[in-house]
Structure formats: C-alpha cells, structure tokens
Image 1 (cartoon, rainbow, N blue to C red):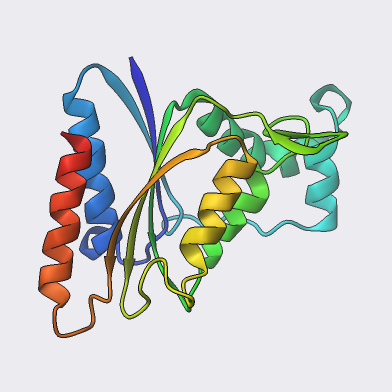
Image 2: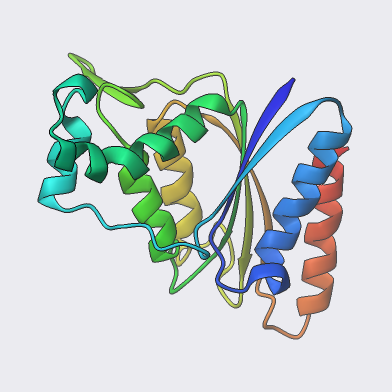
Length: 197
C-alpha cells in the first residue's frame, strides 16, 4: 500500500500548471497499485506563521503542554503526522518572486521540529524522515529552474534533505510566460507522465 501526500502551494487552484503536473504524477502513482492519498492545499487554508509562543509549544513534550500550548501545536502535529504517514510526497509549487510561496515556507517552518522530523547530533543535524521519495512539480513564468535566479528548487531540495528525504525528482514547466510557453508546458506534462508510468 503506497501512502501519498500531495502538497499544493499555488493560489490558482485547478488552473495552476504546477497543480496539474502534480495531479498527473499522483494519478500515475495511484495506477501502480493500492494507495492512500492525502491532499494538503496550502492555498485553501492560511497556515499560521511561527511565533515565539507557537515555537515553544511545538518543542514542549506533548504530555507536558498546557491547554494553550496544545492548541498552538495542533496544526504542526497534524502536518508532521501527514509527512510521517507518507512514503511518497508530491509538492506542487509555483515560483513566486524567485522562491517558494509564503504558504510553503510556513508549512516548512511548522514541520521542521527537532526530535521529531530531525535531530541534532555531534556531527550536525540528521533528518528522521528517511525512506521516502519526493517529487517537486514546479511552474514558473520566467525563472528557469536550476538557474542562478532560481532559489525555489535548491532551497526546497535542501529542506527535504534536511528532514531525511534525499530522493527528490523535479518536473518543471519553467518560463511558461515566454514565446514557447505551450511547448514548455507540454514537455513538462510528458515528463510527468514518464515519471508516473
């Protein structure tokens, strides 16, 4: 049984190219056998930014939290459980102003928890979410993925690796606002189909 978590970060819903690419990957993965799918649409909900109080609540042991801390930590706990339950993660994300959308950064801040998704050792931090594969389905209007102005894909790949998710594959429709936009989208869709096949 495959457990898939699909994280969507675009504000454009069904019109989003990154969401469409991610949906193709997910559909193909599900055709390979029994699977469970969880979808976390970051544009459909407003995740909270980490505050000092929320940070303290997230780090407090669950059985020692006050009622207020338990309420503050609840969303982070749910997001982490979704990651822990998944063996395959698909992240559909646009490039906004050369980086990830603020909603995806908020998600990252809520799932990065010492002692749960990573730990500190004498040799530095070690990710605890090993044995998982991630796909990044990306779209950008003008930023070429992998170029010197792309801060989304290196950051997101590094962050996933920080959590222990080191097997990451990127499907990108980049530069879709250019003259060859339709061809770029078609090529990315073909790549998504090959990955899922």
